[in-house]
Image: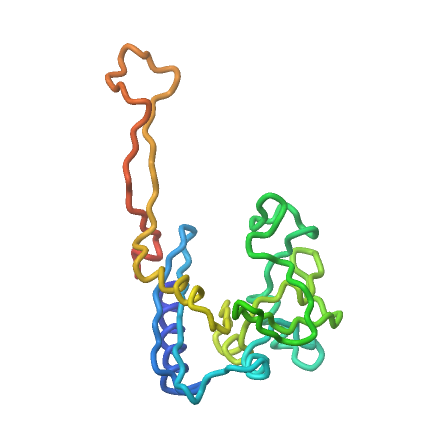
Length: 225
């Protein structure tokens, strides 16, 4: 059921992008499906736009992306969707035992800094508008603000009611990062075989310190896919 629902949403999303042109004319759509070891599938998608339909300015970025919590009173449905699907954390000083924390820092670099306007840094990476407007969403009993919102598109979020992270990409390194999923192959695990300490050493015919098998791992969702 998970795979079927995911496939239906993915097909309709690609149709929205290519035929319905929700972002404009798209020359090429490239994507791959990844199955995490915990089971759920997700898609990495790269869009190449027509030259006349690109989004080169910071005003364009603000038009298609948001990293801010909507007004709960004016748009309660959007507010609920952001809280359910788009918020990261809590982590950092608010919750130091969060799974994303390593060596006292979030591996996803949250919480983000506040910015009054969208800019593009000297390396070509976007810094999204993330204003300190006092709006919060409660997750796990903790109120978190715009510093924990992931980039998203309102229309896609409300239509598919799923985690749809949308990023403005103008960097070759970003494209390389996404394309590596095309050829990285399946998840693999190293499984060790050993005997307990209670086993009589004289009966052990193996001289190696350890043995291992390089195995292919397929999650239940990937089997169904």
